[in-house]
Length: 436
Figure 1 (tube, helix red, strand yellow):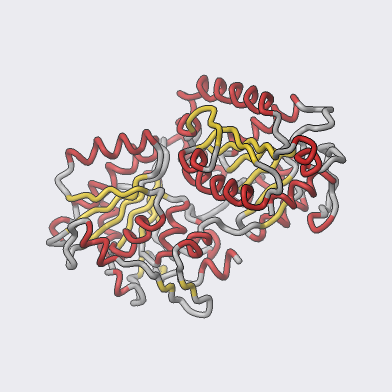
Figure 2: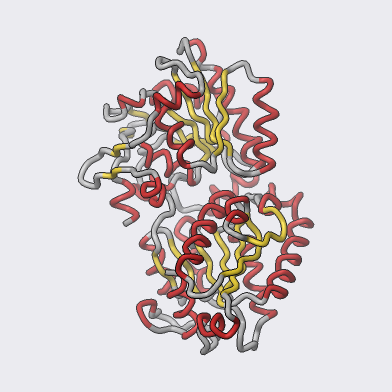
């Protein structure tokens, strides 16, 4: 798909990605494949600033190596998954894994230095294609500066951005899309409605599907779109036996996030919430799929040493281990993000929690036009998953809601309790109806 997108972007506004408005960013008449033919290789510069982006980009890299008729070289910014696919890394992606308004301020100087370093590395690499994955704050600044550097050059690289910015979540968000067409050639969208809106605003775009659907293929997950059943072919009993968890234990999976700033904020709240449940369950254990982020790994490994509760740490980079852990679990606490979608795919009930600096929270509440923060709730416009957000996100509140929503893995199909007048039902079939 990306090779076709690249070729279309080089040729201009033609074919199935015809746009309603005119693209103002001038396009070279020479296709990327023609340049690769001339050079004898395809050079792709990639940037991913967080764990989910590292996963998406690594899968893209693996596919490009299989599909390209020429050898492919990769350079840029990413994580371990991208390095394993052959990325010549400039610096670790953890240097960019910052989100929020107030949270970014202490990192501004480093952020600017890394941006300058990335621009210089991209210019030196002379890529035919630049692919940025999510992390819009860094990605769009990079693409804009590269556009200025290569302006007027016949062989300037094509700019592809993977994961459309959530314009639908913010007041005036759609208007901002028009600015992107000055330095973005093509956007790869993970939600079906995004591509049409991007095209209407002058951006060539293609819907490529939500990345979490690939998990179903890799894990041999049988999804039945005609029912609310998701049949996980995972072995939770084997996982419990391997990690010394008794068959009757109550197991809670904690997904505190992939960025250090959110993990240090959310994990203590999660732990306190679970501790408040100790008297309600005789045998209570914790599983934490640790995000493949060096700073997060170091923090969690250090913190668990002082915990009184039993905790099993697994690699969040391993799909097998992660989904086996979900199958062995009774419920989950999750910071909003990709983890919410993974839990829905696994059919594990969860509570979504999020807290940030109060200035960041104020900005979100002021600028957003949505009632929810997790994607399943946003798509269905209903609180199918309980959310505990911002100042309301306390360990006491989380413990109370966990007691209400607790079910064992084998009881997932039973009706869940009602919270604030909303029926908290399993969201089986969500991935089929919304993302195909």
